[in-house]
Figure 1 (spheres, helix red, strand yellow):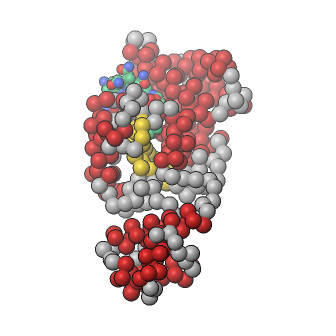
Figure 2 (cartoon, protein in one colour):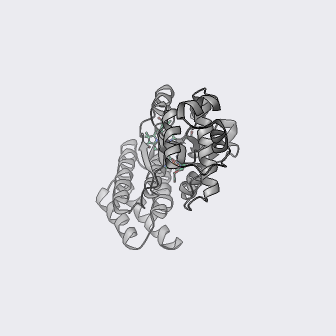
Figure 3 (cartoon, protein in one colour):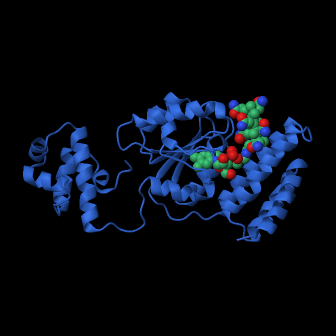
Length: 295
Ligand code: B12
């Protein structure tokens, strides 16, 4: 952990390196910060983000030109790569996120930072640095299990595109991914439902925690009662999705109808053989019956 004063000093040195278009100096600054014990969120939020904003101001005032601004962004991208390699991700959590800028949006560094923080938190992340057309994104999500989608919007004019994707995702078969909005265009917004989302994240340092909560991830093992309730919920969801009655599922799995009813109510301590039969009858991977779903 590095103090506020130390971070301010490092940030100044980093901005100077960017303004001088000097990638080697920028790398030295960040390496020094890492050796001084700066954490990844500190490097991302207290050094790289404000430095990028500062570069924007310098460009706006005509102190640097577009080429210098572009090189500054390219250098910051290299710093993100360096930091991701240096950081030690925790063990996998079995969660997958898709992180992307919304259609039309060319700013992707914020999205990339969020993607990195999730990777370091043990998530598998599909990161699209180029905004993908909404319809292709939705098609992609239909063929892949994704627990969470993080949408990044910088320019307020692209907020309707974020809302459009969110509403399209809501139409997907359950369990649909949870939808998280982030980026400067949403930082003052407080009502995610108005945009079809499940949450708006304004502080990316807390984003990984919030993402885990949103998908219902828990570090502690469930009690037997909770596990049976989860199985019951999943069996009922899969049965209705397959348009089967309890009686039809009972016949297909060779079990009793009352047994199925007890399972769905979380009241049956069922055997592994019974779970296998039910999974087979529902044509559902057994894993999908055991794990809590995110909807
Ligand atoms: C670099 C840059 C560019 C680069 C982008 C490079 C890239 N690949 O990302 C290029 C040159 C392409 C560019 C283009 C344009 N830009 Co520009 N750009 C910038 C600049 C200087 C820095 C942006 C940046 O990297 N910020 C650092 C990142 C890390 O911050 P961030 O995006 O806010 O992300 C943080 C949080 O918001 C959060 N977050 C972000 N996304 C998400 C998502 C989730 C899910 C979560 C949880 C969190 C999260 O995490 C980050 C943590 O710190 C800013 C200046 C500024 N004040 O920001 C202008 C700025 C954003 N650009 C601006 C403009 C106007 C443009 C152009 C229209 C310019 C033009 N006339 O062509 C185009 C827009 C093109 C488009 N369709 O998008 C304006 C936007 C004004 C506005 N609010 O509408 C700004 C503010 C400059 C200004 N003062 O005028 N730009």
